[in-house]
Length: 187
Image (tube, rainbow, N blue to C red; front, top):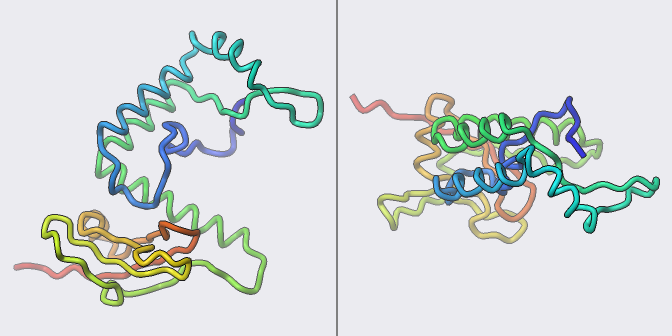
């Protein structure tokens, strides 16, 4: 089964890496390992062997048609995903665009009067954890119960400094925060 041509592939899905909304905790080694696994999994020469193996785990869609539930990606798509996610600045820009796309999609799909949507806050409204000088972070609890559901690191703020805002998803649910901040010139 292939993915619809109209829907662009998500680089995290291509490499089978969960997208958490932040790039923290995602090492180059993890990305490289996922890249190699994706290459092996989707390699054209391996496709026939996977197809024979996949017959035992094929699923029926109710119309008598069977197929596996996994998408096939090209080597170019896999390589492009790896190049983007392995470069910290490209990954930060991609993550930002992906978060914005998901927020826009969620807003389009909502038909209820009550919107869980996107809450707008100032960085000063978040608590700051400076216990580790190398990993300063700001956080805010979420109504899902996670005390640090919304977490923003200093590195993420530096990457988004020119925009003056960052969109952060809750680690425990589907709520989002748009955090506004200003960068002070040291000069």
